Image (cartoon, one colour):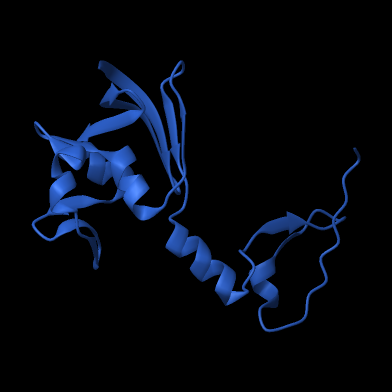
Length: 141
């Protein structure tokens, strides 16, 4: 086990200098840091974020919580999130949950982005919702 600060990317949230314990490839956080970095809180019904609660399997309770710390890596596994850890640089990145990725794919709605035109004016895809849009891209390599 190793204790110290880590950098953490969880969805849109980026947190630097988070005090954490690492046990192998697992990242253990305090309750306050779990909520601050990921939005998840452990309640009697399970890990909750807003109105969504994910029950913790009773036989695996110790895998998720121990001595006032919470295993964000185990929670990510339960949610179907991908996790990338650079242990040397103490940096962790948690991807989107599998259910959320599937929902976005089923919606067939492209994510919004903004790019400048040749004159430098910014345009967003969301400006054209409900219209047919042709996107052309290229790469120099």
